[in-house]
Image 1 (cartoon, rainbow, N blue to C red):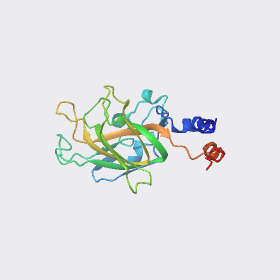
Image 2: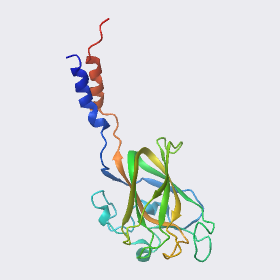
Image 3: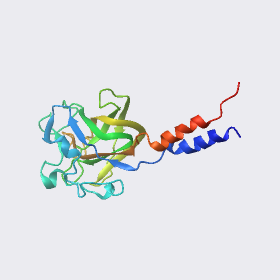
Image 4: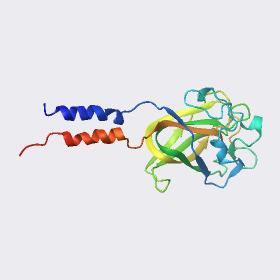
Length: 228
């Protein structure tokens, strides 16, 4: 009978440690470009919904949201680099550098996926970002505790819609995102630049310690003490 309070406490706390599928499409609050090869657009265009058919997509409907990208609305709703080769070729082989951004998620999350609407002109081109390195921080970007390299976001074959991939759930409030490759292969048109139209992440908010949780921990005082 003495084990019953401990069992009740375990059952009470179980939901706080449970793992489930992502419930939120995370829209970052700020994004800052840390390079010197930006050609067109502004990093803010990657998170403000500009160019999207639904400027505030959710986890329930983002797969049907389309992006006008460069072909429909000028270059005010995308971000893209210069062409270091000055006339086609492979951005990275021609002297292009990895492209880095610092992203504030606006809160603490367990992040498990990245979603991007690719830079295009009405059809898929190799300028679209493909491979990412993601570094996670819990202290505003002062230090990064986890690095996930070679995160590939495959293109699904349809222009103007979201491409996505998942990865191991990782906690953080800031992400340092580095684009390390585009889709250049010498066959698909483009590849002399690197561009993104819109960016989101998937995951779950990490709740603040709640009264219910503190109350559950308070049950510890009710556990029977071992007698000498």
